[in-house]
Image 1: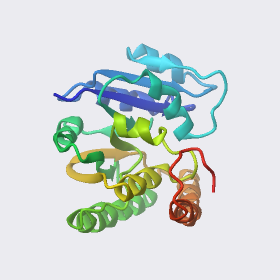
Image 2: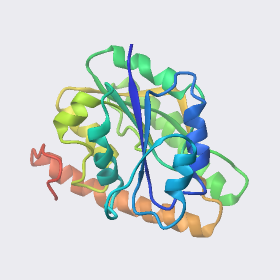
Image 3: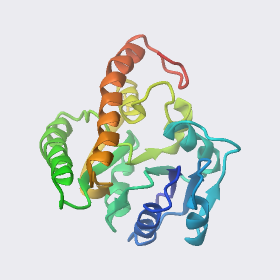
Length: 243
C-alpha cells in the first residue's frame, strides 16, 4: 500500500486555490497529507488554505521559484510518494487512484497524467486546449510507446520520494524543472510513466492578459531546453548547479 503527500506551492493564489484543494479532498484515494507552501503571498492564500484544513508552511521570505517552494516542504514529507500540484490545477477525482498502481514497479521514479483545460469558452482557452490535444493525445502516447516520456508535467506529477531525495530534491538548476527531473531519472536508468487515464485540469487562458503569462512561460521553456541539454550533457547530477 502506497502513501502519498501532496505539495502545493502557492503565491497569491487565493482565487484559484479553493478549487485545487477541493479536488484533493474529493479524491477516491485520499492523500495522507496536504502541504500548501504560502510563499510570501500578499493576499489571503494562507488563510484560504488553512480554512480547508491542510497544513500551511510559510517561508520567512519569497523563495523565488516553484522548485524552491516545493523543496521547502519536502523535509516534511514522510510518505513513499510525493504529488506536486500547481495551485491553479484541479485533479479529476480518480487521479491519485489511477497513478498509484504504476509505482508497484520499483523501477518507476516519476509519473503524471493527461492535462486538459478546465473550460473552452474563449479563443484563448480553445487555443490552449488545442495545444494540449496535440501534446497529450498525440505526442505523449507515442513517447509512452517508446518508454520515454519527454516530460512528466510539473502541475500534476507523482514522485517516488526516495529517488527525489537522492537527487537533491526538485531541480532548481534550470527553469524547466519538470523536464529536468524526467530526463535525469531516465538517463539514470529509472522509469518515467505517462498515465493517460489520470486527468488534471489546468488554469485556462481566459483573456489576452493571461495568455501573455502563458507566452512568457513558453519562452522560458524554450530558453530552458538548451540550458537543460547543456547541463545534463555535462553530466551534472547535483540539483542546484546552474547552467
